[in-house]
Image (cartoon, rainbow, N blue to C red):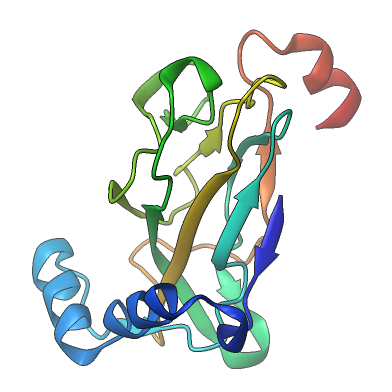
Length: 178
């Protein structure tokens, strides 16, 4: 996966997208939809920005880091927007949302142009990207942004980095790499 966080390197439409989803009006809409007050957009796009994944690429199932320690900001929401003008189901690259034990995938979606996925970041918000088949004729393109609060969420216990888990059909991968 290639990640671009430097907004000066974004194509103009992506720069405008980044500005729009960090605007006060969009934050107010997210607060209304989610019930999470005082959301802050990450102007540094730490971990976010443009994500480009080529044929053969993957992103293992994981929960994201939950604290920007140096800024004392608690991660609360993820937004993923897909920028693929053409994407075929058989190429893989689906986003998956898993249960807290990574035994059941509850949501799976093809990364189609303008599709948007928003989900709460928590200690159980396991998600990942299905491997892209080597024969895929395109690069999977998405834009990710994360939202924070200065206050911890209810029930917050401690800071952690990104934590990876193997899918149920990846027993060997889980033993060797996780």
